[in-house]
Structure formats: structure tokens, C-alpha cells
Amino acid sequence: MPLQKTILYIAGPTASGKSALAVELALRLNTAVISADSRQFYSGMAIGTGQIPVEEQKGVPHFFLDFLPPDTPYSAGQFETEGLAFIANWFKNNDLIIVTGGSGLYCRALLYGFNPMPEVDPTLRAQLQSELEQKGLEILQAELKAKDPETWEEIDKQNPRRVTRALELIRQTGGPIKALKFHPPAPRPFRVVTLGIEWEREELYQRINQRVLHMLEKGWETEAQTLLNRGYSPNLPALRAVGYPEIFAILSGELNPKEGISLIQQHTRNYAKRQMTWLRKEAGIQWLPGHAPAAFIESVISMLKDE
Image 1 (cartoon, rainbow, N blue to C red):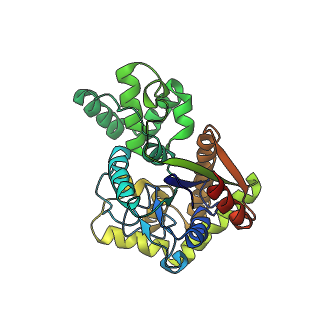
Image 2: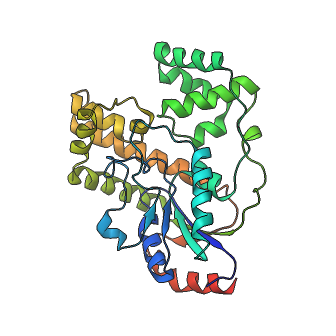
């Protein structure tokens, strides 16, 4: 095992096979997995957020998975603080842990840190909330696209909270978010080794389409209805995750199932494209072919031992 404390970060778009590879590596390396997927933090949403089923975890401990009620806000800053505390404790008796997840912002916060965002004028925040309620999300999306195309490409545009938060910063500072957000990696008491799973675009899109159908077969609609029955509003940020607006529209009769499923697949493909846009800007990723990442496990283990 490596002498230096190490985080093995497994990156890739949704449906690329990150969770399965993380489990196989954790079994070989006798370690655990930290989930850095902001959608999978929430309980009662296992099917709709693509959480790895318990039986597929193969006994590997998973942390920061399925631990928050859907109405509990949880920021990247909170994840950074709590995740670093957990890792520090883990490293008292272990040399390595695996991090995986599709939320680039949360991964970057944990592994490298980022500059604190400026405090937003409460009046501006209230104004944007009012605009959202009166004019709708599309108007705010158009403003974001015009003022900060890079952020527009990267964030979840269907999430009102993400869009309004981005516009808060843009309106307050008068510039794009990239100018504010990140500095060179903050000192961390560990090294980060990053593996990325890469698919040809059409192969990945086929995997996404099939995954959506599989999630529906497993009972995604029933899971979503249960959340509504428990009193959770479909407008909660957690329930604006990719696919949920369409599922709720199917349940209410606003969309017919065929149309709704097609939209979920389309929006999930769009989400995967944004994830890859984000990842291709990250330095130091060692890419593995999607069709056979497990074939590289031995070389990954050798690399960790040698470095």
C-alpha cells in the first residue's frame, strides 16, 4: 500500500460504471467508499438517484449515502467540512479511501477546497426568488446563459436553486462565477489519484437510456409517490434532481408515460454531457475505457504501490 495517505477518486458521467468499479477496487484494497453525489445524500430516493443497491455493495462500507431527509439543505461547504473530518479519522488507521460521485462541485470541494463565496445581499436573494415565482425558471435560465455561458454549460439548469444561486453571484459581482470560485488546490494532508471512466458518446447514451428504463422497472414511480405521500413538496431542491420533475408530471397526469420517459432520458443525457464538460477541464485524470475498466484493476493497484 502507498506510504502517503491517498484518496482514489473515481470520476465519470452518470451511468458510466463508477460505483461498480469503486466496489471492486475497495474489495481489493480493503477500504471503503465515500459517496460525493449530492443527489444520493438523500433518503427515500435510492432508485431515482441511482444509488448502488446494498447487494451490489458486496459488503464494502459506503459513507455519505442516503443519510439526509429530502427537505434538508446540504451545501458543498458542509460536505467539505464533514467529509474532511471523516477522512482525518479514517486515516488514523488506514492509508487509503475511495471517493466517487457525479457532483463535480462537491468532489472538488472535498478534494481540493474552494474560495468562500461572497455573502449575498438578502434583498437580491429575495428579488431573485420573487422573479422565479412570478416569471418562471426559463427567464432566469436565459439570463444565466447570456451572462455566464460557462456556468450555464456546467450546472443543472433544471434546478431552480442552482440557477438562482448562480445569478445571485453574477448580479452581485458583475462578472462570471469562474472569476470567484476556485483557487489553486488548497493544502490537503493527502494526495489524490484520479481515475476517469470514459465511453464513446453513443455507447454512453445507450447505457443512460437503458438505465432509465431499468430504474422505472425497479419502481421509481412508486418511490416518488411515496415521497409525495410523506408530505415532501416536488419543488424541494432535492426533488428537482434530474428526472424527478418528469416523474412527478407523469404521476399527476401532466405528461403521458411515453413522453415523460423520453424527456427523462434526454435530460439525463444532457446532464452527462455537462459532467464530461466539467471533467475534461480537470487536470491529472487517468482515463480508463468504459467497456472494461475492471481489467485495469491490477495496474491501478500497482500504480498506487509504486507512487
